[in-house]
Length: 489
Ligand code: ADP
Image (tube, rainbow, N blue to C red; front, side, top):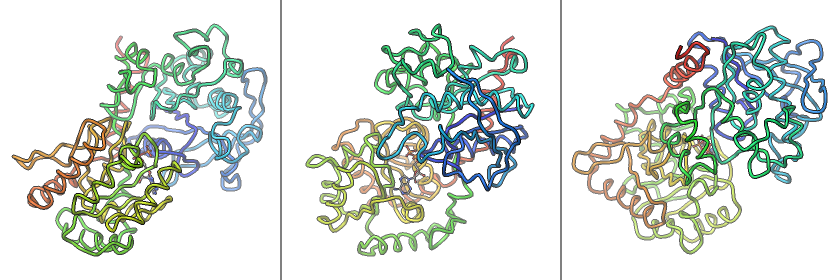
């Protein structure tokens, strides 16, 4: 199949979140399965043109009020032959930031910028004379591509093209004033309640959900959750309406980077048969974080964005968060790596100063994140919602038992411990309250001190799980096939 991925980010070129990893890894996995996969994205200021090749000639994109003339560059996803096309337009993309900057978190011309991307995807195909069977758009910033396909472009060379739209995080929807709607290049006929309109504003994600042939999200449980008001961010109604076209497919893990047997960022490599060597990493982590080096005390690790989605209010909220009680009432050590909301950074800095068994590093640190996965005994993720989540899968592969709230991808990947049989791969709880977090960490610590044989068996079980992208890519193949015009005939 010929598949065009339309995205606002893809590693290594631009990344603000897990979307960037998922798009590139999926594209590469699909191309390994024999598909002709290509990616189109903006050429942001930080993407160095001198490392790309210029596709000669200007490209005219009719978008909204005007004909926009763009350049086109071509590169490749590292380690593959997957071509990446970059839409070059100084006024739209020649600046710092993908969606915004620290000072302006959401650029006010984002409707124009990402409408251009949606229309340019089609002009690109015409320019290179390559017409996809599937247009696969990711998140709200790429949502215009399936919308334009449905309402303007599904004819001629695109007559047989189908669309798939993936929701990586429904919390981000691209909602703007309707005065900017003409920039989408669509007719006002599309601005209605079962389309772009959202309480008299325009909503890219909503229109993408309505217009795409098939919808996916990044775990089976999240696919169900977003059809409920608590998780749907107001999209639950239209998702229930499209329920039969919505599938949840777990993201994979890049096992070239996240494999304890080969990871160059940890002091001692290990696997299920050499689990004892994990202790070397634990000692290195304790030393690096300034904690007493003690193999007999369990270490609970956390690596996270310090954002409400991750349950940090319940964990670190001043005066009521559970971290203080966890560290004072349970004999364990806790290490945190994270950056994000200021109040939370302040709070964990202050816990670090006042508790002897709590240490935090505030910032982004790739190598420390690997050491925490390898050196911890448990890994805590009390997420409010988690579309897929990667860290719990890294933890399982590293023999570090996850302690998670049972939501989204966490519910799909962590099997709860059964004290009677010793079955399971981690510890789960349902209610996001400081007390539940405390109780579940307490339960894990109890298992560590009293049921070490169960803990070790669970580790080995988790390490043998398969989270490769190949498996996910095969599921996407099925979705693509079901989106084709002949499907179901
Ligand atoms: P999300 O995309 O919602 O942040 P995921 O669990 O899907 O959550 O992915 C987060 C990724 O970012 C993981 O690879 C995690 O290790 C990494 N990460 C998050 N915060 C940090 C940090 N402060 N330092 C290093 N890596 C981090």
